[in-house]
Image (tube, rainbow, N blue to C red; front, side):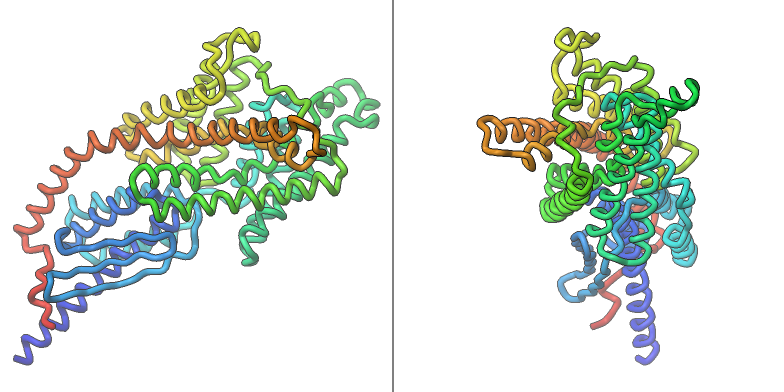
Length: 473
């Protein structure tokens, strides 16, 4: 009787450890900004490795909390896990996916699985703080080229963005409010871009020797102000929001949508404050949105931006070139569909909304195949490549039109037109990334389910599954 009691105690202790490992796996995914469907798939696959029957397992995912319950109608065991440190860690998302498959295939012991999980959770990022800051700066410089600036302005935008990004990271390390940090970083980056633009168009630069003057002078001094804060663009939250809503994970999707709105609001507040402090007029209303660079220049800028954002998201370094190619495909396709005779360009002339949808969808479809070659999740590949298509000029025009309204007829209409167009483009980019992946998942899922089911049956035959009925009351 005593021996039987000790066995039940050890069985319950082992079950609690397994539930804890399952929750820790899910926590890494939640805090790394994986979409909800991926979190659920990886947790179910991990549960299969741990020997937890899917028919008895209940997983509940929210933005800040994970819950798992194992019950058979008579016995019930539950555990909860808080998820507080939200960031973007694509390397971790990729490694968790690989770990969940490897653990089943190679029949890991619990000690080995926990060791691998701890390595993922505690591993240092692939890039230093300054490497990320410089990459973020160049990513914003790539945006600036997309908006029509010259290459001198590209570097001014990059410098302002890199310093603004580094400031935000420092503020985050101190522990101050993340939304306040975003506002401060946007404010400082905008001020720096204004100072650099003023310097570049000053008489001092014009009086320098011709070679140096040509390097420092820019004909587009205002463009860096629009691009220097775009390292703050919440591309991952908004695409995850669309993914979750389309996958019927409404609750988590709504929270991610609200988080996106708060980030954009904080970002806008910092920019507007800087503009007011500097006394800058509504400069964006006179800037041309029509691309006038050669296609190769847009391709280079898109590649730089895609790799820059991938660095911010801690994407595995050895695969950055794949994202560079994806960024080129997405942006050049967008421009070809968008431009045409009305803008004196080569293209289909279908407008930026359709162009953004086609560009994002095409690269997303391509990556459906690429994921099997490089063994990386689709989410990690597709999101950084479409960020360079964010319609920054339209967003700024909407913002400044609202701020500078004086009761003149047509002002509100113009602001709303820019705002609606920008929103449609962002939505189309998100849908373009999400829909092909969702449809492909439906096609691929049956094969993966059969493969997983076969592995599970093999583990059951080896006695690897938990029998909850033996746990006692």
